[in-house]
Length: 280
Ligand SMILES: N[C@@H](CCC(=O)N[C@@H](CS)C(=O)NCC(=O)O)C(=O)O
Image 1 (cartoon, rainbow, N blue to C red):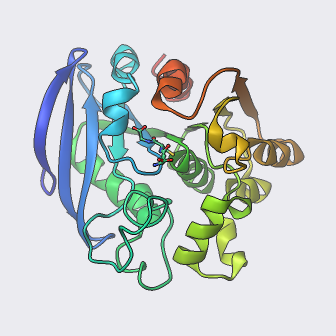
Image 2 (cartoon, rainbow, N blue to C red; image 1 turned 180 degrees about the vertical axis):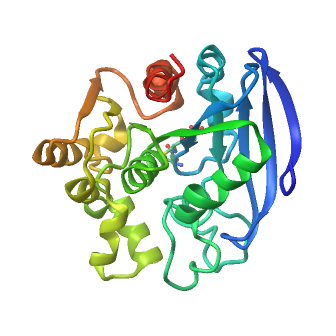
């Protein structure tokens, strides 16, 4: 790797889980990510996974059990951290749903966030370029995410049809302009002019960016954040129906928002992407 250094590595299902850090030009600070490399030789397709609030690049690798499926289909998994960290941005550590661990995959335009909080460009541009120069990969990629990361996956995926061949999400924040988490973060990062929020709201974006890629969303019916109106999958579903965007939205009775739910359905998500990426 030219720029990124591997800080630790573990054997896993015949491949390796590695943790990396690198100086990011986009975020103007050190950024971290994790990678699962399957044992399969030659260029492999990549699946990006965007995590939720409070997560680092580690939660998904430790808790989701995705490596077993990635090994089976020969997919590389790439999991970025959820925000820049320790940037001395005022207020970055005051709340768990803003700043550290809560980058919301947007390019902030407002002070004091705009210098470092450029997670949209980081995920869509800088990280994939770094991955491409560092590993033997195919150009085809998919994107998946959970909660805040589900929002990120839908937004990055819908806005970049040329970059992502497949999209899926678990318990995504599907209409951030209409929920408390989204309103708070978008106000802080983008300012109070809500017209600038549309580019970061999947339910708005799908009205103008629908296409033929089938989207898979899984949602626990007993998810406390669903009940609180933070996720709003029904708003996204309605927008998809309006524009003919193919969507499979599955509700799962008894399941909550946690990684126990993610571990339960992650195999189906990896298969969804493996199929689109020609790995099945
Ligand atoms: N910190 C919040 C919960 C945040 C939360 O549920 N985060 C989810 C994503 S939205 C997560 O993945 N947490 C990390 C984990 O479970 O490993 C609280 O205490 O209510």
